[in-house]
Image (cartoon, rainbow, N blue to C red; front, top):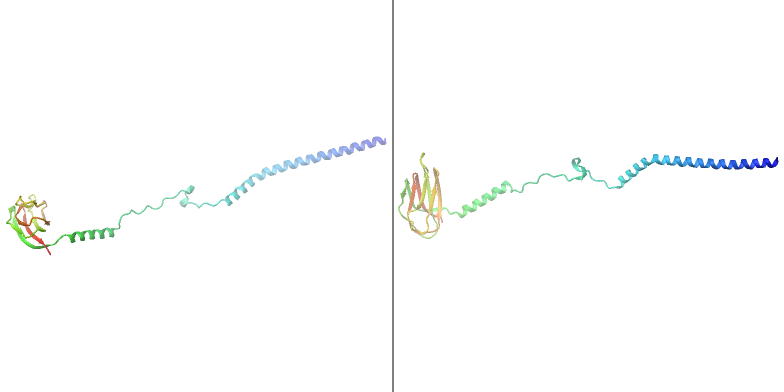
Length: 203
């Protein structure tokens, strides 16, 4: 009887040890499953936190004006045309006109003067020296006639011939000639009333 009771005690002790080990294994498995569930539940929050930290570490880009995406460069205002200012153009025009006027001599002594209505061959006149001499003219044509006013040299044998041709109803002008000192005679062809003068430049 004593031996049987001892065997039963040993068997019960072994069963207790087995049950304790089984309980430990079950407890460890439950903890593992619970840890995995917690890790799965916390994964989105951790990923969001990682993204926030990455954004904080990265240098911030300036936001383009007018809400343009991608930092595209916005076109600026159109460039001003590179034209000179109006005042500058006027000043240049005045200087150019002044230079032209300065290079143009003024009429001086009158050598001869002729007036008529219609076409004539003038009397002769003499240019005293080689150099500039000029013709001045003024004419007015009657209404209804084709306006014509032409001045030329009557002596076609001269080396240089002058030619003034106008086709307006009225006009006036001055032309300088730089050659042919000596004797001259003019041919005026016109149906208008006119006056022609022969002048030397003013000194």
